[in-house]
Image (cartoon, rainbow, N blue to C red; front, side, top):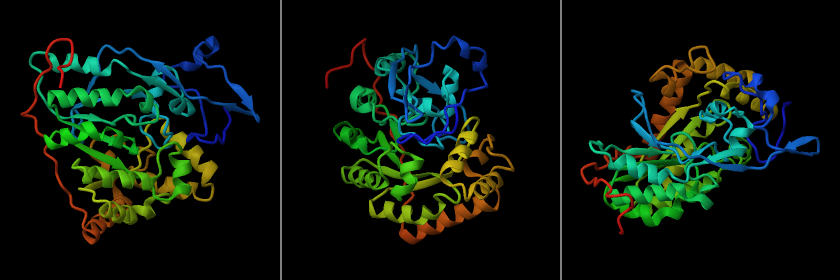
Length: 356
């Protein structure tokens, strides 16, 4: 499809994925939704498809990630963040990592039941379960489906440790289950804040809550006893990097227990989508942005290697690290470490949850 400026969407393209030979199957056409022309553009409505997976726990052995298991209640994410490293996963389903990723969503309503089975298996070794590692567990469709909430309810009942990363203040809806989990020492939250500038957020992550709402969520969570960090992720050179210090300052004012930052990553199909987005919204600085990213990524659009993929390398990465460290000291951002308790875990009994 040609480059499109679609109000309310992050990606400017819905190009066909090529890594899985979709072009050879495109003529069948049965995977395409009927679209309606509107002012010469394809009007994309958000659709949700029920997915029935056989398992729900995803394992990883990455040495640079602080967890070895995660749960993802949804595929795709309506927040529409153009930089999202999870976009390429939609290509596995013969869907575009572009607009399809943010408009053709999948929900796993049986997630809590599947997790119940996994936790009940003999020999299961308890370790924190991460949520929000692929797509946002509190994206808009959680309001209706409440899959994330059902998972938290199960983890609280079993006293199983978990972490949540989100861009949404919708997490506050679940304070009634997060507070008792935090009191047991089995829960922590990280709010991702990329920009506090509404004009940037509107095009960078068009359907995510405003930065000020996320800061308010940090404040509320910590006031209610739920430990909450700020995640300045990702930092995009020449687009959002100038806000690094101001986000740290605002997070401290909101009572954040700690924080970290991550340079932008552009794996697989994300890189061309991101360049198209730059062409559309920042044509005056495309070359500069991509030059700095490549300098942080060993001369490429993306560095897939362990450790450096999260930190970046070279002078620009070192500069961001130094600026963050200075801001942490200047504003007094405590780098609290949350050691979530594992010793309280009680495997679920039977096919149904116990009554609280």
